[in-house]
Amino acid sequence: ELKVEQNPLFLSMQEGKNYTIYCNYSTTSDRLYWYRQDPGKSLESLFVLLSNGAVKQEGRLMASLDTKARLSTLHITAAVHDLSATYFCAVDPTDSWGKLQFGAGTQVVVTP
Amino acid sequence: NAGVTQTPKFQVLKTGQSMTLQCAQDMNHEYMSWYRQDPGMGLRLIHYSVGAGITDQGEVPNGYNVSRSTTEDFPLRLLSAAPSQTSVYFCASGSRDTTEAFFGQGTRLTVV
Image (tube, rainbow over the protein chains, first blue to last red):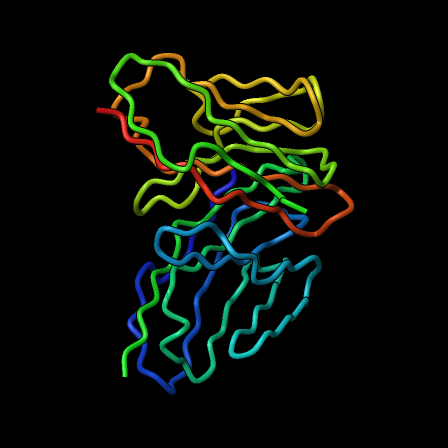
């Protein structure tokens, strides 16, 4: 059974500082996704990571994937209030195409 | 291009009632999925489909039925609603040719 673990589950950030969210998964994976969700809203796709060593960056967010360690990280640089949201990682198992397995989510609150 | 459309956005049911949550996509995607989101648990897969006429169970299928008669539509049926089915439901679609899973806006269901 595929397990996806995110940590931390809650992250209180100070504006201007750097933080990392971790996503571990228990089996081989073809694709790893990062999503953002604002309260009461749907999921917004941030990154799709397709291969070992993949690194993608958008603004203050950078995601990376290490398939050998079965680990992805979402790094936040110089946090700002607008990044307050819940962040999810999701894994698409190699043998179960289309069946995303989600982590529990990391609730991020950025304060001055 | 509407993407993934879910209806209704909100619904209140009495215990024992049945209803259908609608999901339609206009991107000609092969696979479609239904997830439920409960606080602190991320999204869990209910049912998914890899094409018209093909469906399979996900992690939490009990109490739900699906069918996929067309590529575009993937309705989720609650046979006899229970308070434990109070949740936010998301429909998603995707394709082997794309690198993203596209999510609908969600249906917030309350069973009283």
